[in-house]
Image (cartoon, rainbow, N blue to C red; front, side, top):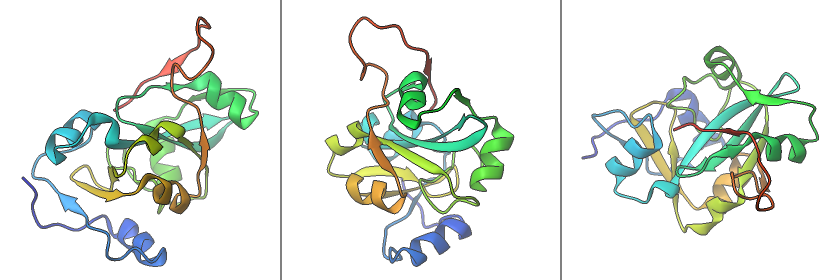
Length: 174
């Protein structure tokens, strides 16, 4: 059940700056912190949920946009960025880089500029849903538009996007 609500003020400002002030933001009485919770609340497929995951590549924050059912292959992220090392960012780093807490990180409107990779699998859907800056709010957008507004670059960074049989380290998040 949706309820009248607004997105996080920083995210609302980002929508206005991008000319997206008319984008529908939905709020839910229960948290939608995880992809599973969000998909159940919205009534969409799990992979239509966009996880905004922050990693550190050679010490710099990087945002990876991944479908809700996917797992990020950190080795593919490392190779895509040409980095020496990639690892999951701490909650403190996520908040410092984005201005948002884990569970509500949107794909744009962050406190600092970051490189953004968007998994190509997001394009498999006509509409995807992402956090609107709080654990209780989400918004829909066409995946190509979302990637464009996020300043992202499409890449194959989902676990399983590499050659079959190669073992790769993975990171999972909801």
